Length: 433
Image (cartoon, rainbow, N blue to C red):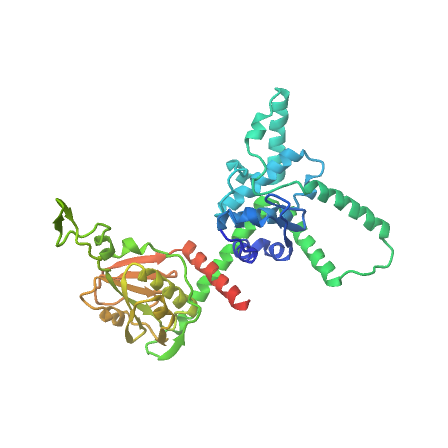
């Protein structure tokens, strides 16, 4: 897999907002002399050849792992400790928290399930006690069996970093009182701020810091929800007829497995048709026919409560549905603006939207063609339900619970909304570059 450090940093900033200052301000340097990746407490060094062999989720894990070593000041805290046990303790704790947050531990990495309940110092004390007990019985197999240093991480730089730190401290003491010369004031201030952040996080300990990170992520989710729903107060009873153009729609993974949701798709199996089969050389041979794609009609809520962010996500799902069905897409508020036949993703990119007024679901329900079985409504659910029954699939983004007459309601849950937030931030980052 290709490796892109900018993508990795961007993903970490979204996934670990509490550690954002450190992610943004440490240095990242390529080093082909090391086999994997490592840090000296200020810089993360990596071998791109190693990272190219990993999945994206594993690449993020490698760098997040190194960020944690820096954020929690694991190098300085290793002074006076058993190096083997401290390495296992620090890797064990941070790996479990990263795993809990959805990252994949690189094969061979330390994976101690119980470490999620400890800070590094606490796990170190426990493992050290176990090691001493085993040494008394002339065996250290138990401590070794808990895992070796992460395959994607080397602690070989730690010893030199501690030595340089001591030398730097001694040199600083000798130079106190002498006038400063050279150097960048801005760089010094940045380093000072970074060190302050490291001091703050390391004092918290791993458990509390990762708990704070979860809080930050929840705040981001709430921000997304507010963005989705912030225009709901503008919902009226009229159609404003305002033209909207949605740029940079992009793509995203399907939030729903449309192959199984669309009933017609299920009916068209992978079996070849034997219609008009014939016999040749004593064998029955099929007259292979291309199975027709099902037909789906989609109506998009473009009322005043639908932000561009939300409409963009509607359209990404339309692209995903296009892979499994023929498609017609129309928009409504208090009026229905007609269906557009969608043959390619480019047709979706070129759509123009007129609306932005109130919401009338009766208008949406009446828009569907009776002969089309697959009917889908994308909405935030902010309006009274229609008094006309319809066997449609309602895709509802946001908190509003709806109970239409007939059909099936699929709510986009918090986890899916958070993923949409991540995707949107990725798009914003690309626009700025």
